[in-house]
Every structure is written in structure tokens, then in C-alpha cells.
Length: 149
Image (tube, rainbow, N blue to C red; front, side, top):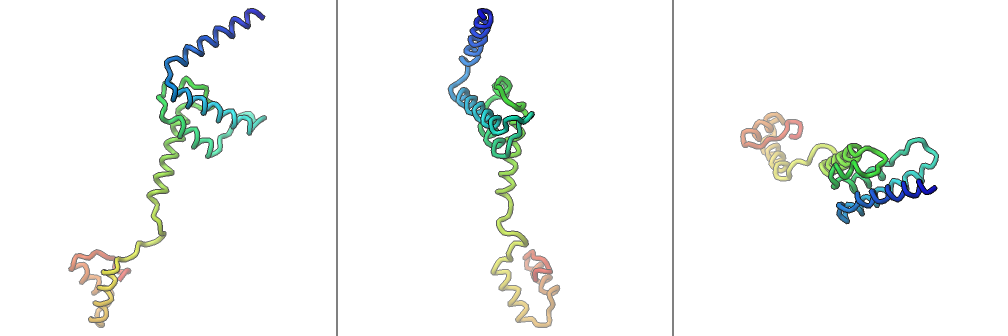
């Protein structure tokens, strides 16, 4: 019993020495990450391997991506630090894809002035077909598809 107490004292002393060079922000981040992992484990009590939901992955990735890689390797994570960094890259990719997605599906609207010009050319020149009107617009430097005319 005395040997076990001495062992616990020495290991706790080394754990304390490990925390000394860390900043308060890093310590707070580690505490939050560990608490979240405990929540994940409690939710899945009895599972052989913990499964992180997309929300869990996003939370841990956003929380841990700013820490240096050496610090990530020292943390007691349920996944490898490379996995957390991959989750963060995926999170950024999804965000970028959502922002760059067009707001309206389909072909973009034709500019109103070009639309009016096409209608005016068609009314003033009833013998012209859409191909001729398209050609005249190209001569004017207006690039528009023939099927749009």
C-alpha cells in the first residue's frame, strides 16, 4: 500500500511538472477537450470503440486546431492528433464549399440591358433569326450564348 502511494505521488509530481510550461489557454483547451471526450464516452457506455458524431468532430477540431503539434501529441486524446487536424481541414473545406455554392441553382440571369437589346434587335429586324442576332452581338463584343438569344 505504501509503495502504491509513493508511485501515485511521483506520477502526480511529474504530471504537475508537465503542466508548468503550458500557458493558461493551452491548459483550458486541454480541459475542455478532455471533458468533451468524457461526455462522448459516457454517451456510448459499453461500446468497444467510441464513435464521434459530426458535431463532436467539429467541436474538437475547432478547439484543438490552434495548439502546436507537440502539445497535441502530449494530450490524452481518444484519436491521433493527425485525425483532429484532418477533421479541421474537412470542416474548413465544407465551410468553403457552402460559401462558394451559388445562391440560385441553374443558369445565371442575363443582364437586363442585354435582354432589352436582343428584344429590340428582334423587333427592328424581323427577318433575322437567333443566329444572326447572336452574331451581331458578338460583333458588338457582347458574349452571350446563341441558345440564350
